[in-house]
Length: 225
Image (tube, rainbow, N blue to C red):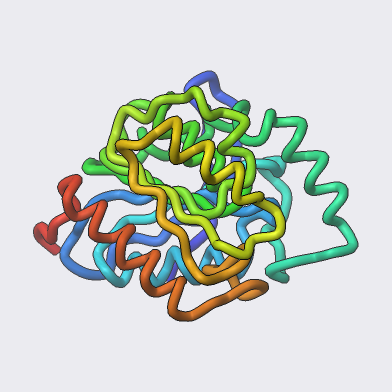
């Protein structure tokens, strides 16, 4: 359903993305921000699935060069250190925000964003720093706590697993204390509970339901097909 497209930031820097046109009455635009592995088959499939529900989806490659191929596997443990170093080089998503903004700019409103792990932190930053969003859902963003002083300018929800070995409970508690007005949801799951490598069906379904409800409250209602 979707296809690879070429985009550029406002200053002309090229990058690639997966684009899935809405397949039902339009609910809005949606930017999906990937985990450290890139625009994996899972991210592309999720984009296509949400397009079937009425969202026009763009999933940008946040870490890779414009001509780099999309991954053929959802995880590649042999290159984890390399990918983590790439994530760290961006300031855990900070320097990728021009790509996120370009995706927002390319979509008709209302525009929403969701992100996972590395992309979950990036989504948190986008909620505070990007223009044109109407709602953001951040899933298990391991470095959100590093940016705890950021203040989202749009309705934002965060989702964490209670048994996530990568995100200590103390970090989640600190985020809750710093942002008592935001929904911070905890699930009986570990890390990556929406992704194939950590999938927990009940938690994934509930988190996605809450996310889509957040988007609906932000104007993501069905429009014309």
